[in-house]
Amino acid sequence: MNRIEVIVHSIDQLPPLPAIIHQALQRINDPKASAQDVVEIIQYDQGITSQVLKVCNSAYFNLRRQVHSLREALVLLGFNTLMQIMLNKSFHGVLSRSCQGYDLDTGALWKHSVSCAILTEIIARRLQQEPDSRLFTAGLLHDMGKVVLSANVRETFAAIKNLVREQGYSFVAAEREVLGIDHAELGALIAEKWKFPPAIIAAVRYHHTPWLSGGDYSELVGLTHLANCMALLTGIGGGSDGLYYAGDPEIMEQYRLREKDVEKCLVQLNDRLQAVEAWLEVA
Image (cartoon, rainbow, N blue to C red; front, side, top):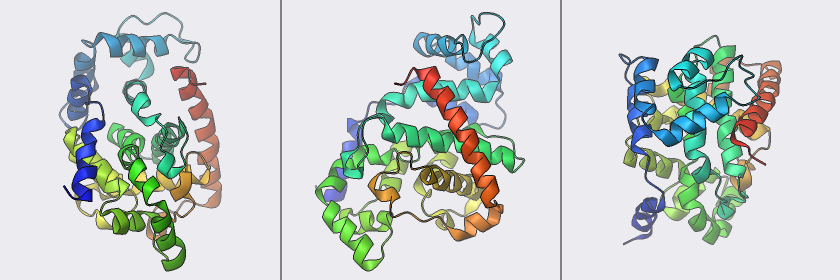
């Protein structure tokens, strides 16, 4: 096998996506499905249900009564919050791995990924759009390819850095030049293997290159790109590639967010991130 084939084959090292999560994501992507349809799938998984109920009954939400079922949680917390708890619980383990090739210690990639996911919702509300569960999922999983590609980047980091510093490549373009594939494309292949909805696959694949997406998913891709840019501004989990990252100016102009808007989004992010860390009991 050549290098690209070896890298793609290494996707199999990741744990399989739980079937219940796969089914839930398919329902989320179905415009005819209701929030209750998704809950009816999730409620039969004892592990996920117990985790979600533990979070719902935590001090953070301070509900007036104990929640004993996902149906109750849906009524009291709303569908988006319910899905965020479930997704964070499901992917926390994989995203918490260290990615030494990107100078990301244990937990750093997870923190950046959650920041990006939270920002998709914050930005959507500031733009007076209804938050989309697919958007939160794309934000959470946009850098999944780094988990697999990390070892290869570490081995070739000098060559990648040389292209970035000496020849003006973006970090992603340098990954592609040296390795034959970049972490965004590899992340999209992971999402395809896990049978994610097409919109989420597109957002993962084009989160660094939104101008290439086109089609029906350009809005989802653009907001994921914008959220990633803002997350990197915080310095949270940027790693080595974050030092060489620049956002697409056309996307920035498209949403007409001023400096004050960005500052307000980042203040909200800090509060929400602390809440999520409390949910998951992250040290």
